[in-house]
Image (cartoon, rainbow, N blue to C red; front, side, top):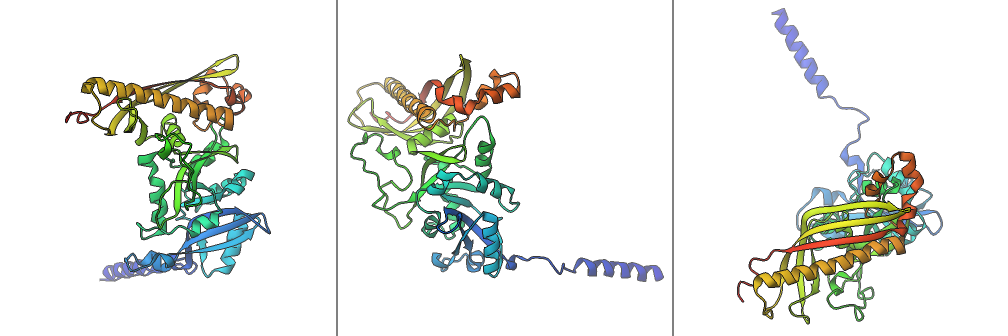
Amino acid sequence: MKKKILCLFLILSICLFSLTGCYDATGIEDLSYAIAIGLDKGDNNILKLSIQFATPSAMGNSSESSSQSNTTTITSIECSSISSGINLINGYISKKVNLSHCKVIVISEELASSGISEYVYTLMDNVEIRPSCNVVVTKCDAINFLENAKPTLEKLTARYYEAAINSSEYTAYTADIQLIDFYSALKSSSIQPVAILAGINTSQTHLDSEYIDKFNIDSSYKAGQTPIKDKTSLECTGLAVFKGDKLVGELNGLESICYCILSNKLDDCMITIQNPLSYNNSLDIYLDYKIRPKITVKMVNLTPYINVDLSLNAYIASTDNSSEHSPTESLDIIGKSTSKYLKEQLSAFAYKTSKDFKCDVVGFGKYAIINYLTAEDWQNSNWLSNYENSVFNINVNVNVNSGELFSKM
């Protein structure tokens, strides 16, 4: 009987202690969750830090009656660093800032042009920031970008940021650049960073396409330039190119496709070419890899000779009935025309990065390392400076797959 009482006492004691809480624990109701961070040059201090918070109503209410206007709130402050700015905001708002759900880090072009390594290192050192957080460079002020994040097809702004970046998977007009990618490239001796290029789309920012080849208009836009009319004014198109930690240039949609193809990041995309079977018309073609890119780099008298062999699958999305060729002959003509077009665009992109930007954003350097016996030899080669002397030979083979294209001819 005594043993039974003792066992019961022990069980009750364990249950009581397991139900007790920590008096100093922080609950979710004590935290203010950031979904985006904006960085601008300050007017009266070094940095203007803006944090977009999810409001409690947005986190707890997913009903359609919840309006977008009250799902987020933005707090902005001028400060000397990110850490001090967060500390100042902690002293102002009623809850502690938590960055564990941050989706994007938005940096203005003005700040990016002056160097951002300090801010990237600070964010990477913060245990709350996820390495998968996306890095965005915006053509407007970062705070204006956050203020214009008003999605029409998503209920929550956080989900809207994710969806906007995920479009790169099926357009390749930009790329999924995460904080860990940017940081790794910033520290690397074989590649340099890029970031997602974004902007606010208005009628005043639309690109004047009068002097652009009509077959390349749709892929020539950068962020904010696409002639789209919609309530949502934010646009992520193109890439921001960095030399070290400083912004030096931009890539448009087609150049971003070239970047994705050469850097082995392509899922699938669509390009428009002149129809070789009907020169007055265009031809829309979907592309994906048949074989992943094969890249080799040889050093000849300290000059990098970069050879790229590409094998791609093509699927025709649109054409007309003007062809007089047999289906097999027509597909062969289209394949050769597409191969020639891509070779020209990829070569132009490669030389633009080497001659104009002097930045190896693709990472050809990792293929050049095998030419050096020791790490010291590699460091002494100073690849990132020597890249501007590169010579490219890009070979493209496109295999057109379209079983139904000419079935009605």
